[in-house]
Image 1 (cartoon, rainbow, N blue to C red):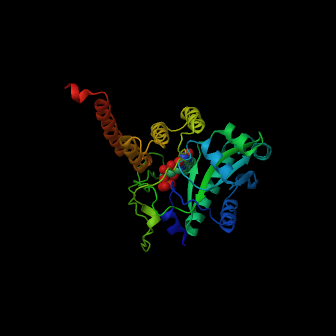
Image 2: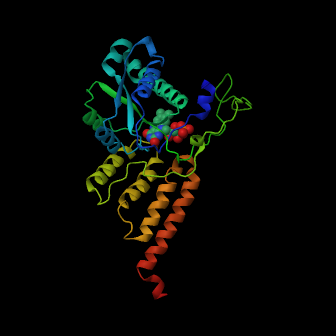
Image 3: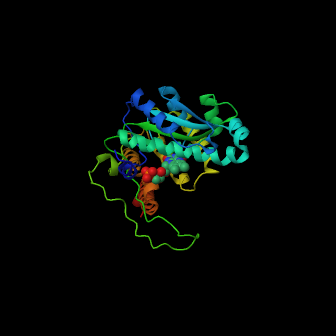
Length: 300
Ligand SMILES: Cc1cc2nc3c(=O)[nH]c(=O)nc-3n(C[C@H](O)[C@H](O)[C@H](O)COP(=O)(O)O)c2cc1C
């Protein structure tokens, strides 16, 4: 696949098939990561491929921002001691992060060419990841990449507006007629997608696993201190979905609400306003249901 075609098709996938990609594909993706440029030509990047289902599951559980159910994870991290020794503080704090980003994007493009889906996750709980993956104190986890075969019913793709580009000086407008390169348009069903199915965040099994729910909330509370504001509402709505995992068929209303939440939740990323309107509608349904359950209608 032409690199421009890969650029156009590239996207984050959030719903994956349960079967993992082959070892050959994983090897090719790590090769792509290793082909990324390196600040100071210093190899400070470290890659951990996580495919043991129990470890993958645990990584996802301690990472509430992992908005994907991929069966495999690739972690790109940095040997901080080596980065600092070779390139000073700038190397440790800046260059190595750019290295990780470049490697991650290589993986995303290579995956697109291979027909594989990826999802970047930067909001990670370092302490928890250290414990789960035995990361030494001098190794900083930079970005997790979920990897898998995209589901035939993917989450909606993001829409991109006009980029902000200046000419010669910051703020000096460039009347850029922005057009994506004209390439033959062969529609890939994975590219745009309809409605998402499945519990991308890794739903809890029937019987309500309180431990996982508690872990999700604790890790979310920690994350909300530092991560983008919009993740907070997502965490709560995802929390509701998980809470309701075992309510069907006992409570039809809650079962219907859960199905609706799972269909709509990823719109928080795609269209914030629509997400807000949908939350209002959801709340109105809950409000009417609360009135009904409290006998308000009968009393009127
Ligand atoms: C540096 C970086 C960090 C990101 N962190 C997360 C994350 O923690 N969780 C997540 O679900 N997506 C994360 N993403 C994915 C973005 O949400 C996604 O790229 C964006 O919504 C645009 O969608 P697209 O890549 O499908 O076009 C990250 C992307 C980048 C580049």
